[in-house]
Length: 408
Image (spheres, rainbow, N blue to C red):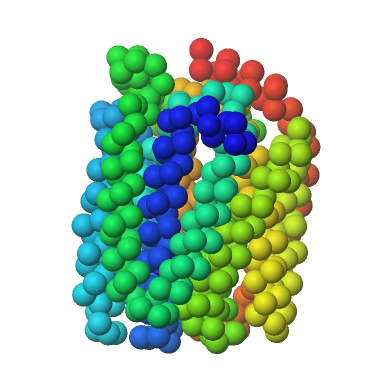
């Protein structure tokens, strides 16, 4: 993995920029979620805020492919980083419950930038990385998220706890600016010449992609997965903050520790994913079952330290599954469809997870966090088992050939 990071120079800069703006954003998120709970004491307010961070993906992710076809990917990423730095300034004016409208509006606008940034960044990876390095790079993507959670969430919780939420918001602003500067040093994020890029993207239309998706049972499996799993992810995301603040009474520091436990698990996950040499679909869905078992166990533990360890375990399994599934998609789906496919995926998964977090917030008004957490863990186990059985009929080599034939 380290040899890959050393040889893939463009990805190394993309990786560094992702860590910096991710850490800053996590500083802000930890401080914001804790501040909301302290101001309102409502799990529903947390659910609304997190839902508003996801809903823009429905509006803007489908546009990401069109935007990157008219402008260079590098310029798109830089522009969204700098725009988010300006928007993040508004958090400095939050002083009490009467300012919740700032929380909601700014969360929506920041997420709008991320809805464009995320699929453009992801579609850049197979464009600038050699095919043989895809699995290692996707493992680094899990490490990236791990560093963001460990450094961003833990440090964000500490900074917010001792210096206040506004200090964390200030760090977020600086991180967006610094990440934009790093991206400006990249020569390009395109594959081939600019002329070739515009010729290829011009032929990409969602109207052409839909028949391909509908006629491929393999792609239907991937798409159904991206519709079902976010429903459960939304439960887990909301519960993490609620567990820390309300169930265990650890406030900002508890939120940071839980997020850093997830991050540590993601950093560790490549040690296991590198051992898997084949049957990527099988092992990714086995990982999903493992994640569900640990999430269900978390719902029943009374010890904060044990819950943190179990969150780390869920992240290890999540990191393995994400690495393998992303590698399958990037390697199997023809490059011609990467921009549209990842844009569509971001739209579906983030929109669903947004609604899931909203409904989870509502459910917490009626049911205990532990009961909701147990339900989420059982859903992971059921979904993982179902997808595992479904995936047994597929050969990735055959599916890759079929998809290549459909693009001709």
